[in-house]
Length: 106
Ligand code: AMP
Ligand code: ZN
Image 1 (cartoon, helix red, strand yellow):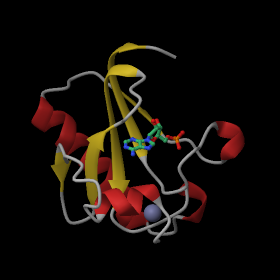
Image 2 (cartoon, rainbow, N blue to C red):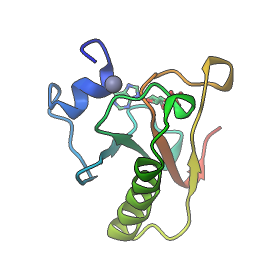
Image 3 (cartoon, rainbow, N blue to C red):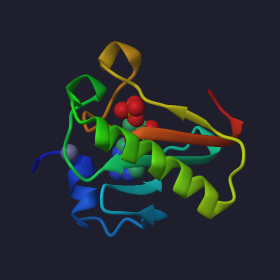
């Protein structure tokens, strides 16, 4: 989607560093970290939220991407969050999984 900030990041428009990437997803640092380590796992495919995701394989690949990333970075203990819908705090309507580790500030 042309006006989606995460699609632009995936497209390389902002030269964002990907801490990990694979065929299905990219992972980058949250611009406004709510923990010592705060990463976002973002599918390459534009899907608005978990409610619009009807691809079980992609869902599995995203969780596998969480595991790949934490293993690669040596993060042993972490929290994963998916905000779905405005009332639940979703601000960017391109599905993403937060990875939070260390001291959390929320
Ligand atoms: P959510 O509230 O679950 O939709 O989370 C959106 C997250 O994206 C927030 O934690 C923001 O800080 C983060 N964010 C927004 N724009 C950017 C950006 N350009 N680069 C990295 N993270 C971003
Ligand atoms: Zn998008």
